[in-house]
Length: 268
Image 1 (cartoon, one colour):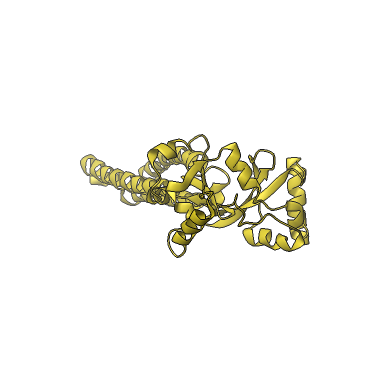
Image 2 (cartoon, helix red, strand yellow):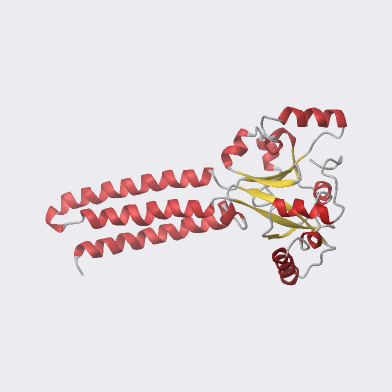
């Protein structure tokens, strides 16, 4: 084996170890299920992989030449290491800034937010700390009980920042707030009547989870690269699982039966 190939393989092996550690952080901490597939996890992995596995080892393969002399060779490898780790640091910062940092509920839907969006929402550190008992943290956008004040807040956000970015209205997902969320949920048994495909999706979910349609409701989860539905327990509002049904399909189920009024006083 030539010295160049050996140096390339050594560099590749070190890069693989670094990548394995970063993948754990990305998959299980920054983009925990189900956010990895729909909220930018794949994009983050591609970015990190390109920098870590392609840039560094390929530069080593291109410039490694024992004829240069030991001093010149060490200098070249030092430059490559600086380039690789600088690029990797920038890539990690980008992926961390775009991670699923918070999930909010308002307007009959859950919405994932990146770290930069959370910062822009104006939520205080004290409130944010109260949301940390879940991963990712989750918040309920609590509108005023007074109808006139509620209407004023909603009108303020028309054409401007959406309600899910109103950090001043964030509350933890207490049992009371989870039950308010459940009241706005959609009946999966009605969704199943829309098509044979949805009937199979819903049927497979019930078989896998062991729950019944009377026990659960579904609400959409909006991520950056797609929409899923969260399935919630009607008794306590706890999230049971996700199901591959989008908001349009949930809305269509309204024609199949009576559903909660999204404009009711408990909705946001």
